[in-house]
Length: 276
Image 1 (cartoon, rainbow, N blue to C red):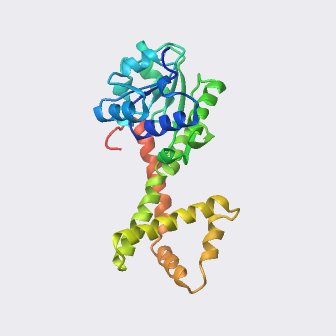
Image 2: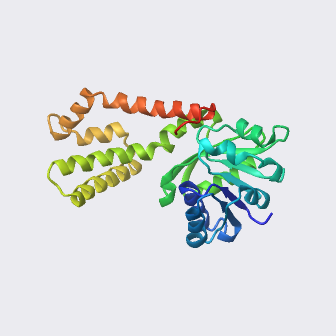
Image 3: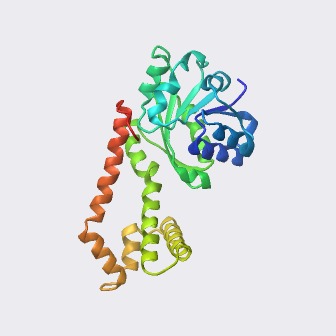
């Protein structure tokens, strides 16, 4: 095989993983290849990452000892068409598509072969080296396969291994989780503007507060509940805000939203591939 790792789909997550792998020295740029239908994504991989990029998925399949499926769930079936006949039988297949089971991938590639598949759900903070990823082995994948996948993702993420039935929940929590966090910060900025700050001041106040709180949470032995309690003086300003959130059932709304994301992941895996 010409390449150690081939990306089918060269979007943001593929870019994050490629950057981490190259930055860490685990693989060189010339050991990677990527395919994408979008010329601008191929150009980014070629010019910024120095990774060979092509339009054809089949070229990646033929030339890579490991392929990583980085296409969106609703495009997975199309991406897998005719791929099995181009793959070496010993190719390791890693998928980061939400909801798409290893059994589905096996079937599309040709169910008679024991395809070695590892599923993963990483998140976009891998772009800044602070990602989270969960791995699950398919029925024919070996511990060595999952260890190689772990090394790939560990270049820019913390990695855990879970059973495949937990990956929908991982998708809902950490895969989609950055968007929930960004939504909160977005509304903090909005509130600051409504309180009279300009956009730049509002963003600085909200973003630095979020960064500081995240670092405290990561470095402290206290639970999130205890850290919140330490900021919340009885009858004070924080208590006024927390009480308002409780009156509006914000906690339940957040939990139900994450469960809705899990359900959507299940639907994607069940063939109901509408808008993700």
